[in-house]
Length: 266
Image (cartoon, rainbow, N blue to C red):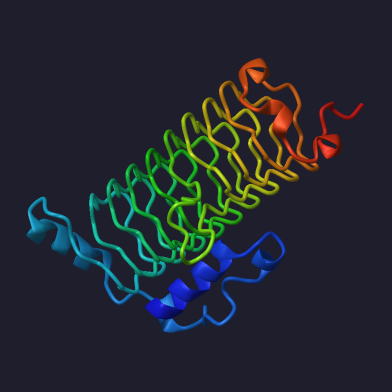
Protein backbone atom coordinates (compact mmCIF):
# COMPACT_ATOMS: atom_id res chain seq x y z
CA UNK A 1 0.00 0.00 0.00
CA UNK A 2 2.74 2.47 0.91
CA UNK A 3 4.75 1.74 -2.22
CA UNK A 4 1.66 2.11 -4.40
CA UNK A 5 0.70 5.41 -2.80
CA UNK A 6 4.17 6.84 -3.22
CA UNK A 7 4.62 5.69 -6.82
CA UNK A 8 1.22 7.02 -7.89
CA UNK A 9 1.79 10.35 -6.14
CA UNK A 10 5.24 10.86 -7.60
CA UNK A 11 3.91 10.10 -11.07
CA UNK A 12 1.27 12.80 -10.79
CA UNK A 13 3.42 15.43 -9.09
CA UNK A 14 6.21 14.92 -11.60
CA UNK A 15 4.02 14.87 -14.69
CA UNK A 16 3.74 17.71 -17.16
CA UNK A 17 0.48 19.62 -17.75
CA UNK A 18 -0.90 17.07 -20.23
CA UNK A 19 0.33 13.84 -18.68
CA UNK A 20 -0.61 15.00 -15.19
CA UNK A 21 -4.28 14.62 -16.05
CA UNK A 22 -3.88 10.88 -15.52
CA UNK A 23 -5.97 9.77 -12.56
CA UNK A 24 -3.81 9.38 -9.47
CA UNK A 25 -6.27 6.88 -8.07
CA UNK A 26 -6.00 4.44 -10.97
CA UNK A 27 -4.43 1.26 -9.66
CA UNK A 28 -5.54 1.86 -6.08
CA UNK A 29 -8.61 -0.02 -4.86
CA UNK A 30 -10.55 2.77 -3.21
CA UNK A 31 -13.28 0.33 -2.13
CA UNK A 32 -10.95 -1.90 -0.13
CA UNK A 33 -11.22 -2.03 3.70
CA UNK A 34 -7.78 -0.40 3.90
CA UNK A 35 -9.26 2.71 2.29
CA UNK A 36 -12.81 2.68 3.68
CA UNK A 37 -12.68 1.16 7.16
CA UNK A 38 -11.14 2.06 10.52
CA UNK A 39 -9.13 -0.48 12.49
CA UNK A 40 -9.41 1.64 15.62
CA UNK A 41 -12.15 3.55 17.40
CA UNK A 42 -12.11 7.13 18.65
CA UNK A 43 -11.88 5.72 22.18
CA UNK A 44 -8.74 3.80 21.17
CA UNK A 45 -7.11 6.98 19.86
CA UNK A 46 -8.12 8.93 22.95
CA UNK A 47 -6.58 6.22 25.12
CA UNK A 48 -3.34 6.47 23.15
CA UNK A 49 -3.28 10.23 23.64
CA UNK A 50 -3.85 9.86 27.38
CA UNK A 51 -1.17 7.18 27.74
CA UNK A 52 1.33 9.29 25.77
CA UNK A 53 1.09 11.98 28.47
CA UNK A 54 1.75 14.88 26.11
CA UNK A 55 4.13 13.06 23.77
CA UNK A 56 3.27 12.58 20.07
CA UNK A 57 1.34 9.42 19.27
CA UNK A 58 2.18 7.02 16.45
CA UNK A 59 -0.64 6.22 14.01
CA UNK A 60 1.48 5.62 10.94
CA UNK A 61 0.00 3.31 8.30
CA UNK A 62 -3.24 2.94 10.26
CA UNK A 63 -6.64 2.52 8.58
CA UNK A 64 -8.70 5.35 10.08
CA UNK A 65 -11.21 6.05 7.32
CA UNK A 66 -14.49 7.61 8.41
CA UNK A 67 -13.35 7.94 12.02
CA UNK A 68 -14.51 10.87 14.17
CA UNK A 69 -11.32 12.48 15.47
CA UNK A 70 -12.76 15.98 15.73
CA UNK A 71 -11.21 18.28 18.31
CA UNK A 72 -8.48 15.83 19.36
CA UNK A 73 -4.93 16.86 20.25
CA UNK A 74 -2.79 15.20 17.59
CA UNK A 75 0.12 17.63 17.73
CA UNK A 76 3.26 16.21 16.09
CA UNK A 77 1.51 12.85 15.62
CA UNK A 78 2.96 10.39 13.13
CA UNK A 79 0.24 9.76 10.52
CA UNK A 80 2.57 8.86 7.71
CA UNK A 81 0.80 6.64 5.10
CA UNK A 82 -2.34 6.51 7.27
CA UNK A 83 -5.72 6.32 5.51
CA UNK A 84 -8.17 8.94 6.77
CA UNK A 85 -10.56 9.15 3.83
CA UNK A 86 -13.86 10.76 4.90
CA UNK A 87 -12.57 11.11 8.47
CA UNK A 88 -13.88 13.91 10.68
CA UNK A 89 -10.99 16.04 11.93
CA UNK A 90 -12.89 19.27 12.46
CA UNK A 91 -11.05 21.51 14.90
CA UNK A 92 -8.36 18.89 15.56
CA UNK A 93 -4.83 20.04 16.42
CA UNK A 94 -2.41 18.48 13.94
CA UNK A 95 0.29 21.13 14.29
CA UNK A 96 3.68 19.73 13.33
CA UNK A 97 2.22 16.33 12.43
CA UNK A 98 3.73 14.02 9.82
CA UNK A 99 1.07 13.52 7.13
CA UNK A 100 3.42 12.34 4.40
CA UNK A 101 1.83 9.92 1.90
CA UNK A 102 -1.36 9.90 3.97
CA UNK A 103 -4.83 9.73 2.38
CA UNK A 104 -7.41 12.38 3.28
CA UNK A 105 -9.87 12.08 0.37
CA UNK A 106 -13.12 13.89 1.29
CA UNK A 107 -11.93 14.27 4.88
CA UNK A 108 -13.25 17.17 6.96
CA UNK A 109 -10.42 19.26 8.42
CA UNK A 110 -12.37 22.50 8.70
CA UNK A 111 -10.98 24.75 11.41
CA UNK A 112 -8.14 22.31 12.08
CA UNK A 113 -4.66 23.39 13.14
CA UNK A 114 -2.17 22.17 10.54
CA UNK A 115 0.68 24.64 10.97
CA UNK A 116 4.14 23.24 10.20
CA UNK A 117 2.78 19.90 9.00
CA UNK A 118 4.68 17.68 6.58
CA UNK A 119 2.50 16.81 3.60
CA UNK A 120 4.85 15.33 1.03
CA UNK A 121 2.93 12.84 -1.10
CA UNK A 122 -0.42 13.52 0.60
CA UNK A 123 -3.65 12.78 -1.28
CA UNK A 124 -6.38 15.15 -0.11
CA UNK A 125 -8.76 15.39 -3.03
CA UNK A 126 -12.10 17.05 -2.22
CA UNK A 127 -11.06 17.48 1.43
CA UNK A 128 -12.47 20.35 3.48
CA UNK A 129 -9.80 22.69 4.90
CA UNK A 130 -12.08 25.72 5.22
CA UNK A 131 -10.93 28.03 8.01
CA UNK A 132 -7.97 25.75 8.79
CA UNK A 133 -4.49 27.02 9.64
CA UNK A 134 -1.85 25.57 7.31
CA UNK A 135 0.80 28.20 7.99
CA UNK A 136 4.31 27.03 7.05
CA UNK A 137 2.95 23.62 6.04
CA UNK A 138 4.57 21.79 3.12
CA UNK A 139 1.69 20.59 0.90
CA UNK A 140 3.62 18.80 -1.83
CA UNK A 141 0.65 16.67 -2.79
CA UNK A 142 -2.70 16.32 -4.53
CA UNK A 143 -5.42 18.67 -3.27
CA UNK A 144 -7.64 18.72 -6.37
CA UNK A 145 -11.12 19.99 -5.63
CA UNK A 146 -10.35 20.74 -1.97
CA UNK A 147 -12.06 23.56 -0.08
CA UNK A 148 -9.58 25.99 1.51
CA UNK A 149 -11.88 28.97 1.66
CA UNK A 150 -10.94 31.36 4.46
CA UNK A 151 -7.94 29.24 5.37
CA UNK A 152 -4.68 30.65 6.70
CA UNK A 153 -1.78 29.58 4.49
CA UNK A 154 0.84 32.13 5.52
CA UNK A 155 4.37 31.15 4.43
CA UNK A 156 3.04 27.92 2.91
CA UNK A 157 5.82 25.90 1.23
CA UNK A 158 4.17 24.30 -1.77
CA UNK A 159 6.61 25.32 -4.48
CA UNK A 160 8.83 22.95 -6.42
CA UNK A 161 12.40 22.70 -5.15
CA UNK A 162 14.34 22.76 -8.42
CA UNK A 163 17.54 21.88 -6.56
CA UNK A 164 16.09 18.59 -5.38
CA UNK A 165 14.10 17.11 -8.23
CA UNK A 166 15.80 13.79 -8.92
CA UNK A 167 12.35 12.15 -9.04
CA UNK A 168 10.71 14.78 -11.24
CA UNK A 169 8.86 18.03 -10.64
CA UNK A 170 7.15 17.66 -7.29
CA UNK A 171 4.90 20.54 -6.23
CA UNK A 172 1.53 21.45 -4.82
CA UNK A 173 -1.40 20.41 -7.02
CA UNK A 174 -4.17 22.90 -6.23
CA UNK A 175 -6.25 22.28 -9.34
CA UNK A 176 -9.85 23.52 -8.88
CA UNK A 177 -9.19 24.29 -5.19
CA UNK A 178 -11.49 26.82 -3.49
CA UNK A 179 -9.17 29.46 -1.98
CA UNK A 180 -11.68 32.29 -1.74
CA UNK A 181 -10.70 34.72 0.98
CA UNK A 182 -7.69 32.63 1.96
CA UNK A 183 -4.58 34.30 3.40
CA UNK A 184 -1.52 33.11 1.47
CA UNK A 185 0.80 35.96 2.44
CA UNK A 186 4.43 35.01 1.81
CA UNK A 187 3.55 31.54 0.49
CA UNK A 188 5.82 29.76 -1.99
CA UNK A 189 3.78 28.26 -4.82
CA UNK A 190 6.46 28.48 -7.48
CA UNK A 191 5.84 26.07 -10.37
CA UNK A 192 2.72 24.75 -8.67
CA UNK A 193 -0.54 23.81 -10.37
CA UNK A 194 -3.42 26.21 -9.75
CA UNK A 195 -5.54 25.66 -12.84
CA UNK A 196 -9.17 26.74 -12.26
CA UNK A 197 -8.43 27.54 -8.63
CA UNK A 198 -10.81 30.09 -7.08
CA UNK A 199 -8.67 32.83 -5.51
CA UNK A 200 -11.36 35.46 -5.30
CA UNK A 201 -10.53 38.06 -2.62
CA UNK A 202 -7.51 36.00 -1.54
CA UNK A 203 -4.45 37.66 0.00
CA UNK A 204 -1.51 36.88 -2.29
CA UNK A 205 0.82 39.49 -0.85
CA UNK A 206 4.46 38.53 -1.51
CA UNK A 207 3.46 35.09 -2.81
CA UNK A 208 5.97 33.36 -5.10
CA UNK A 209 4.03 32.18 -8.16
CA UNK A 210 6.95 32.07 -10.58
CA UNK A 211 6.42 29.45 -13.25
CA UNK A 212 3.07 28.29 -11.86
CA UNK A 213 -0.03 27.48 -13.91
CA UNK A 214 -2.96 29.81 -13.17
CA UNK A 215 -4.85 29.07 -16.37
CA UNK A 216 -8.58 29.40 -15.80
CA UNK A 217 -8.09 30.59 -12.22
CA UNK A 218 -10.29 33.31 -10.70
CA UNK A 219 -8.28 36.11 -9.02
CA UNK A 220 -11.10 38.64 -8.91
CA UNK A 221 -10.49 41.11 -6.07
CA UNK A 222 -7.30 39.37 -4.95
CA UNK A 223 -4.44 41.32 -3.35
CA UNK A 224 -1.24 40.68 -5.32
CA UNK A 225 1.14 43.30 -3.89
CA UNK A 226 4.71 42.01 -4.09
CA UNK A 227 3.63 38.70 -5.68
CA UNK A 228 6.04 37.18 -8.23
CA UNK A 229 4.32 36.54 -11.59
CA UNK A 230 7.36 35.64 -13.68
CA UNK A 231 6.43 33.06 -16.33
CA UNK A 232 3.01 32.48 -14.75
CA UNK A 233 0.48 31.08 -17.24
CA UNK A 234 -2.65 33.23 -16.99
CA UNK A 235 -4.52 31.84 -19.99
CA UNK A 236 -8.24 32.21 -19.26
CA UNK A 237 -7.55 33.55 -15.76
CA UNK A 238 -9.83 36.26 -14.38
CA UNK A 239 -7.59 39.19 -13.40
CA UNK A 240 -10.29 41.65 -12.40
CA UNK A 241 -10.24 44.38 -9.71
CA UNK A 242 -6.84 43.30 -8.47
CA UNK A 243 -5.35 45.12 -5.49
CA UNK A 244 -1.67 46.06 -5.32
CA UNK A 245 -1.05 45.30 -8.99
CA UNK A 246 1.40 48.20 -9.32
CA UNK A 247 3.83 46.51 -6.92
CA UNK A 248 3.51 42.97 -8.29
CA UNK A 249 6.84 41.55 -9.46
CA UNK A 250 7.47 40.68 -13.12
CA UNK A 251 3.86 41.49 -13.96
CA UNK A 252 4.91 42.01 -17.58
CA UNK A 253 6.57 38.58 -17.68
CA UNK A 254 3.31 36.61 -17.48
CA UNK A 255 2.55 34.00 -20.13
CA UNK A 256 -0.55 34.07 -22.39
CA UNK A 257 -1.48 37.55 -21.19
CA UNK A 258 -3.63 38.08 -24.30
CA UNK A 259 -5.85 35.20 -23.20
CA UNK A 260 -6.47 36.49 -19.68
CA UNK A 261 -9.80 38.06 -18.70
CA UNK A 262 -9.25 41.56 -17.36
CA UNK A 263 -12.75 43.01 -17.43
CA UNK A 264 -15.98 41.78 -15.91
CA UNK A 265 -18.71 40.65 -18.29
CA UNK A 266 -21.39 43.27 -19.03
